[in-house]
Length: 347
Image (cartoon, rainbow, N blue to C red):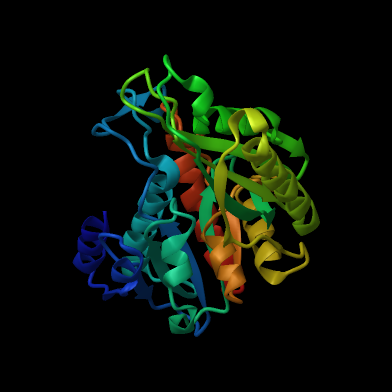
């Protein structure tokens, strides 16, 4: 993807700089930055990410009833390639017709790995005072004004192996401890701003005749409220430790909790939000300010002190085999971005 985007941009006569984020975070490529001059000295950052969630087979996009879908059982990859496609088309047109303001095009890597590429990007290289990402899978018109803090947790249970048929009472099942923890810890939507998810459980043995001594459980918690996040994480940790201490399956448990990205709240009176709302109205969309349970590169930029607004891109059912983006949404996203450039350039 990075090679393809670089080739597309260089064919337009644009310089493309690739940073060293790939080497630092273990990705196959770094973040890409290109600039398109404007008729004014002002500039704005426009950003999309190059990666998708993993998929086992090749994606075959097909056009069905005016929208792009996957022909197989994979994701479509519209998250975030729909925005990548839109920005490439914007680059083609503005490279020829010009732009009211300068454009800094940033294509990040490893967004699906807790925003690793954006977090590794040096915002000091930017000339723009603020920017926009197009990375919310909801109808065009929605503007994310708050996004959550995201905690990842992992529990490694270590019990005692024993013959399951001869001496099961001498064993301490790590799987049993993990199962009891999962059954008791908070899960799903906790309140309007907080969620918890158990994402993975792995461990056990190849045969059925051994009490399993190892099991790992991985999950996440996220919330728009730091206080609520601390509270729910305390419940998660208590459930994991209580299960490990259960006499029937007494295990050691090694807990790891890390904050992968920080949440933010953007004032609705801020100039970037106001400009986005004006651009949406100009193109016939009703602006809607929303609170999101998802993260985006905007979280990483905001945490680094750079103002960034996440705009809905009109895609549907991200990360699912039924993922879809209509042609109307692709065109609408482009139209709104043009209107945004006009708005920032003084109309």
